[in-house]
Image (cartoon, rainbow, N blue to C red; front, side, top):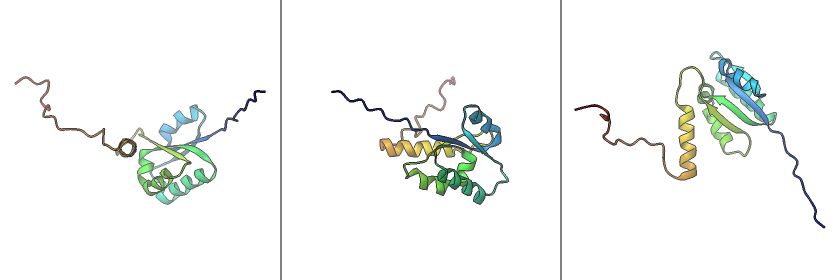
Length: 129
């Protein structure tokens, strides 16, 4: 006798958290959108992140300008199994927070900084001498 077992697919709640100009993209794919502005205090943004976690959101997309203000909380949650916080660049001023987080994750996984730029002395490449 062969028994089949099926795992029930679990639904993961997805949130997008950041400046309203980029949140429309996430609304279009069905994510729950939580817009914040530059005038939103760090305490209020932190409270919103805590609320999203307590409400069971498994994936939280967050713009880097908001993430930079909530760095301590993000580092705490990065050591937890849930949620997965994905930092994305916003449409405004870039602060490289997303790139730095990616670099840290790669170093943790690989044990080396594969994104490091080497000075190869080819800065004049393509210029005629």
